[in-house]
Length: 139
Length: 93
Picture 1 (cartoon, each protein chain N blue to C red):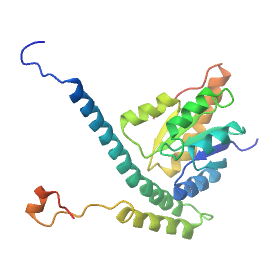
Picture 2 (picture 1 turned 30 degrees about the horizontal axis):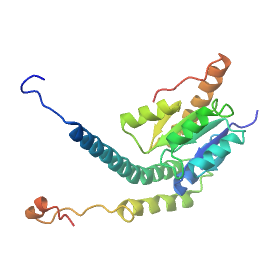
Picture 3 (picture 1 turned 120 degrees about the horizontal axis):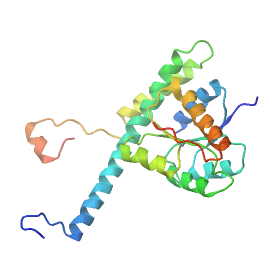
């Protein structure tokens, strides 16, 4: 079975390196984007199983990325996990309303990251099998 | 309107909303400036405990850089006030 592909959208180079390392170690293939526009373009090119998305991205923020991907039939099925420093309850709520299936606040627990991404992927796959858009995973 | 009920005029409500948005922006910026380096430090520390292959020197360097980031530019913590009179003057530097 091929490795699931994560599109990691993050503009902080250190976090990008760290999360890429952690996810590859967890058995994911990782593609990266450092702006919101790059993330949307990469998702539209296909072969992305799950998106790990920062909110404070240049050019187009994470909410804009969610909106663009949810409007597009090519990408609306891809589960989005937000990973953000914005930790207020209303920000988490806004992320989930924008279409994310789960919301991870920074600093996250590195040992749990792979499991959280895998859970989002599994929920989306089982949701599609039932004919829905996937299940939201509450943080 | 009943007598004694507080009355918020439209202009006041707009100003309150604008201040609330400013407060949210400030909190988001503070959270970003604090939590991003903490994420790097915590992640590097976690990888240090992994057996074998973790490129420990690389991630140790990453943790150190983010320690510097927390204590210095571009986000500068205000210095604590040096005298009781400075507390009320807004000159904490």
